[in-house]
Image 1 (cartoon, helix red, strand yellow):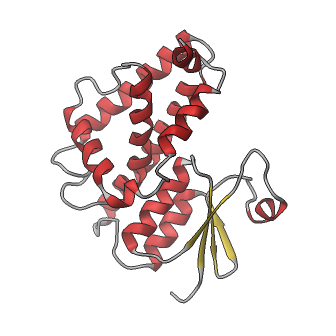
Image 2 (cartoon, helix red, strand yellow; image 1 turned 60 degrees about the vertical axis):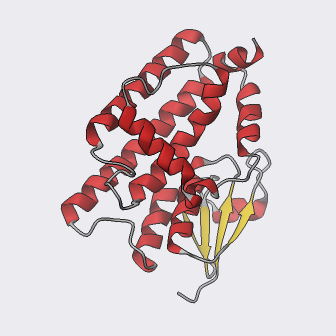
Image 3 (cartoon, one colour; image 1 turned 135 degrees about the vertical axis):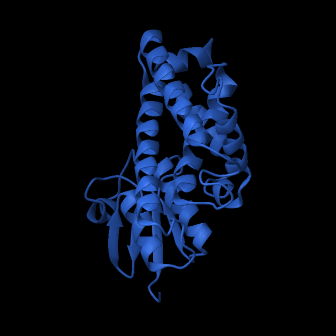
Length: 221
């Protein structure tokens, strides 16, 4: 590939992290530009039809939506992150979508307006991790020794819980030893660690504290 590649991102966006992890795993040279989503500049709105990050600029042509961007990178750069078998590859894509649903529940958890909703989202997340527990077989990664696109999608998911666990013991991973081991390996992988700035935990903590939510009240108490 001879195109210059630029990634437009937001520092807290987990969907940006997916793309950053994939680019790191494939060794893609690129420039990264952060944008303030609370004050979106016109140049960003011109290239992002949904007004969201990430956006990938490839030689002047832009792509949006993280799953689309990751599949493009998978198709056009070496070091495949998908299995070769078509059925297994489709299965992995299903679990990638499952990770997006987890992110939706995470957003519902930290935005919950009262303790009842907070507990409902907590239970939904715990159930999802129990489902993943039943799917995992051997460490360190989703499919064993080989890091895959599913791992790139789950790395940003687990990162939230490093901060949630500073606030309270919610028991998200009760009876999920394989998920916890997977989480540990992902957090130690360089591509996952480097997908965010070193001050990410502090920024996320501040974001959660200022949400005016049930979780914010736990932080304040």
